Length: 288
View: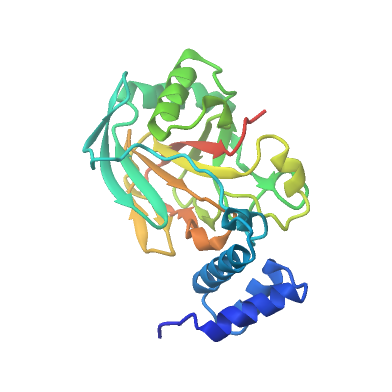
């Protein structure tokens, strides 16, 4: 059933905010009453913007009071619907694009030699993967992530620097706004259950994490080999599965730390063989 945003609903939203309720509280109340979250969020933002404009306030300032302020995000140049993007040192194919969530699948981002070089450099330093713990601001083992991994420092080697420079040109995002490359290895049965890459604003440790460069706003997963079976990157909200193919990559961005971005994703279990990936997370500010 289609949910219609009526004038009565808009008046109710304004009344709640004028009464002193926060936008977060209003949104939660709407969802509890049965409103779909994306519809409720759109109604809330549109109504508040109109209300501010009617009272002589620039509607752009609504971002400061919205439940999840919209962030600038990295974005490949896909004007003209190109089949290839020339990055100077390499031509990359555009295989798949999706508007919402914002997902782009690239072919041939890395050469076979670059894939092998990353695996060789990472292999001696592999250990059980950790995840950022938003409750504390530190890192911890997560039962949902059954892989081994390691981080390179940004620009640590000539190979790393070359790949990072290429990524910055591809997604048109400052080099220094990227975290160091993480390489992960998934053996048969290993997976990473669906999750979000942004940091939960409500978690106690998020303020500490954000000091290093602000929110994550984009993710690029590069496949360093092709598993015999399984290991796709999945987006459950939209039923999308990106097969792990050596040298290819999947990019997705999220303009707010909120499930309405539909960027819930996971690494499906490896059924045969193994999977190697390199992940680049992009922050809104300089990562230090």
